[in-house]
Image (cartoon, rainbow, N blue to C red; front, side, top):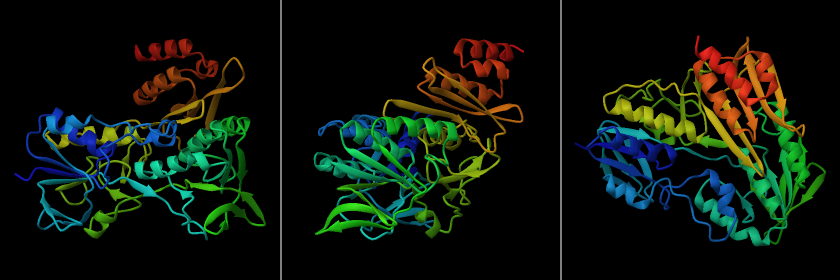
Length: 409
């Protein structure tokens, strides 16, 4: 038996290997990673990993875990192509690895910008440990950083840099931050928080060039204006790494297309994680999501399917982001909501935003309100919506009592 080969050792790939063993799979598991580092958590790269010059990566599993569970982890292995007829993968060094089942957990890569100066050494992306080390090494020399992109990674890094005393300017093409990820109310609260710490926001702006002299960044040009900068961080989204699937003739559409059981159109090839376009039952259409929860829950579902317990993927999505002292947590997916209910803390700060559609709770955003987040996940997953009056109180005890009354019906 050639066993299962997993390409990609991020959150999805490592969780799949672990869950296969937990579900009793006894044949060979090969976990191939193009990254030279032992598999690690990626969210801390923009935050705690930058805190000190010797901060270590946070491993997904201890190094001994792989040997103890007979998982053949191979680091620094780039897969060049898939031979579907021969049921094998061919590595960049020419090695061939056979499979019975193949799982693509290839993740994403940072989207590049193409303006003049984008390839200067003081311009960073922040997607891998290699990226993070390179940026961390440059931190002592940073005095003025321009962040291009008002998404999660850019804003987390902006808050981290500002806390270190670096002057930060954030440039966003859209009229507000987090345009595809949060409500306007949450985006405004995060914008207010960042500006209160000294971060300067430039919305509805696009860059034309990164200006340099003698190979060193001097600024970022916005039309007729140039923002001074000695370093630049680019965070303008991510692109699914679906090239292996494309070249193998598998269906792709801004990601690797899979069905509800995470199978591609080859019965022996599956795909999970950030690179996957899957039937999202809460949206009623194909979607690609980038989150640790989605990656690990898909891995658990696929492990059950591959061990004879077919499991259609239906998990409720949830997300989080730490932006300075704000912990943003989102439960569910908001598409065309027709009503919002906002609640505030005793200081008047935004605490939660409930999203409803035709009277049904479909999503909830919270800021530093973990209890509301956890309760909203349960309510949305169970299809239970407390009365609007209870939600509007923002009082966790009242909302929980309303939820329990509905649960008992």
